[in-house]
Length: 236
Image 1 (cartoon, rainbow, N blue to C red):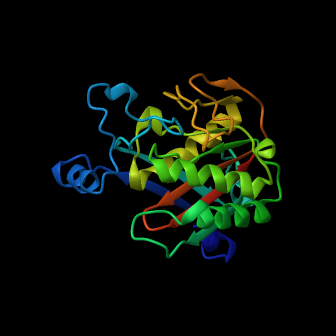
Image 2: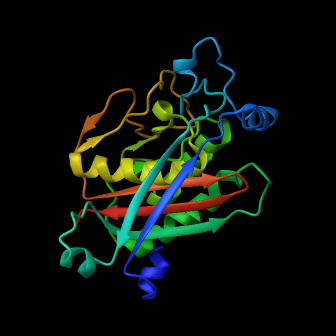
């Protein structure tokens, strides 16, 4: 959508992500590759991104929608502008049919591309953070690599602990959440983070929302097989 607007193919576009896959086939497929949490006796604590005791994600369903519009077009019609699209990055791991590339190499490239395009100081990252072992570990490594060190990584959280992994809807939903966090000055927490994992050693905003004013936010989405997308928004 951004490319179409930049190339003058349209002045506004509706971007929608939606998914409804909680059914025997959908659950069975993810269960067969051991991607789902087996914490069936504590469903509210099953999704626990970046926690040492995480053992898989919880499926969610939902939809998210954003209107992307050329700035002058939006001003002319008096639209309420929630954020400015600052940058994006894409990459493909070509590593494994489901697993991410070692140490988040593809995620690193997508984030680096987005940051180079945006040229802003990101104050919050909405992580892909699925609550699976390798995703959370490798995403943490990639974040440290792209920002330069553990100390330079801004606050990070995964909202999948609250809403589950909404699969095809996750990117749009989490982009909306990131924009709302920026506008309201409230960063959402990573819930169920109870046992620190030495492999995941960043500030994940554990268990309670945090009031913080930020001028730019990043949202990560990393699909099976290493299909990676990163978007950055800044205050309008």
